[in-house]
Image 1 (tube, one colour):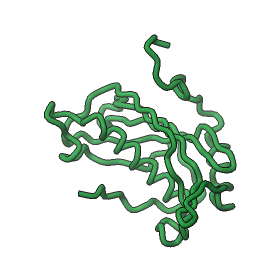
Image 2 (tube, rainbow, N blue to C red):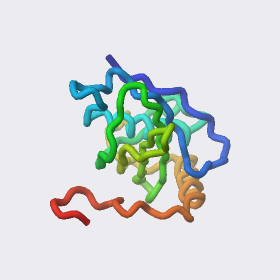
Image 3 (spheres, rainbow, N blue to C red):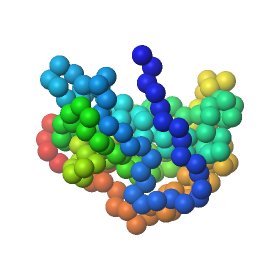
Length: 173
């Protein structure tokens, strides 16, 4: 069964802090035999936040057809599992843009239990501008580049998470 993504929020130029573009309840298809969210589906939640960010950023061209193949691909992901999630738990994901250049951006997502505001996981993702027609990397469309800079500037006061960019290590950092 294909994953269903929410309709995008409209781009208004207002950038809330924290930026929250994805809210849901933990779905049955995300639950494993241990009766909690399977490891892969924390990444699914992050992917929903990626897609929500991308569609919001591109508004009103939030449909793929309107973007004429000018999309993004994910080239790197890191998930940190902090707290288990059970079926039906309300969640929300906050998104921080922590870096951008002419072809790439890095997002840092915090996945929260909405009712208790407990952190359940984080997901750091590096995205690359990609032309689906030519099947190659490309620079951001001008509207996307401008909005990415606006978002980055609006989040200047937010501290970059200490675990951002660290990846995996045996020793605790």
